[in-house]
Structures are given as structure tokens and as C-alpha cells.
Length: 127
Image (cartoon, rainbow, N blue to C red; front, side, top):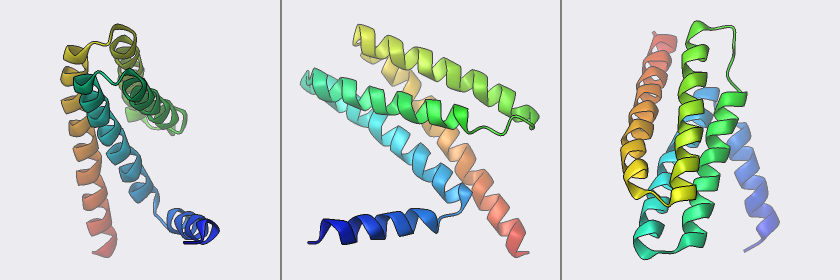
């Protein structure tokens, strides 16, 4: 398979996504990576564990950096992202699965809330 062709297809797919779809992609990846960190912890694969947590932190930082600060909810989201970043650091440094297991449902809930908002917004546009 031609790697360049795949990369072009992937880039074109990303470029054609709406902002809501891109946001969902990021949140899905965040949840996936937190799950991978949990699996790596079970296997005591510390390299994979730390890599998954680093990716989670990168995603959360990107979400924080791209907030549109003119909306009041952005302040609340920024605080939540700061909390996630802090907790992910604690998980990584202490290899603390209990904190990770407490954090994962919060990430899932936030993703699901954005998914519901995206679905509601897209339905309103069609109406």
C-alpha cells in the first residue's frame, strides 16, 4: 500500500470534517488513550502506560489552547482541563490506577455531553 496515498486520504478526511466532528475525534481519542493507559498499567507496560498518558495530556492541552475564550463556558472548561492535566500528571508520576479509574468516567461523560450537543446542533441546522 502506498503510504503517501493513505496520508493524503487521511489529511483530506480531516480537512473535510466539521469542527464538531473534529472535537468528537479528539474526545474519542482521549477516552481511547485513557483506556489504553489502564490496560498498560494492568500489564505493567510502563512505556505504553506513559505514552498513553502523554497523549492524553497533549489532547487536553490542545483542547484548552483552542477554547474560544469569548464564551463564558470556556472559563469552566479551562478549569476542567487544568484539573485533567493535573490528575493525568499524578497518574503518570505515581502510576496511580485509582486516580485513572476515577478520571476516565469524567472524560467519557464530557465526551458524551459534547456528542449530545453536536447532535442537537446539527439537528437544529437541518430544521
